[in-house]
Image (cartoon, rainbow, N blue to C red; front, side, top):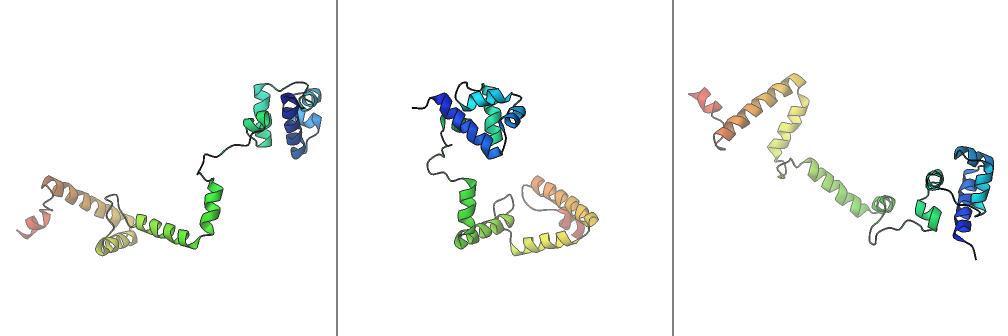
Length: 164
């Protein structure tokens, strides 16, 4: 029966081989001699924590796998990002729902109410005009909004004042 050190050594060996390193090259990368790497791989000694972290990063594996041979576990019922993406792009109905939700979100301001037709037209026209005119429009709308709030939501008195 293999010891834990031998199991860890076998995993270190597989990482080194998968990277295509010789004992010397792997040791150089870890700032160790080839003898130390050989001893790890044979289960004669174990790497310290810092070296184990370096080996795990080099092999793109978890410390759990390197030390205990355990694959990272997912929480029950949770999918990886890759699984979600693969499922989504292969499901036209899902993609239509996502597209509709994105369009709805784009048409919904912070108030949570969808834009009305005239509000959408106003926004489209705003996007067409020059930056100077946009700035002037913003200033006017801000002034009207402040006045409207001061009148307790009763609307702007600017038009009434002009008509008087």
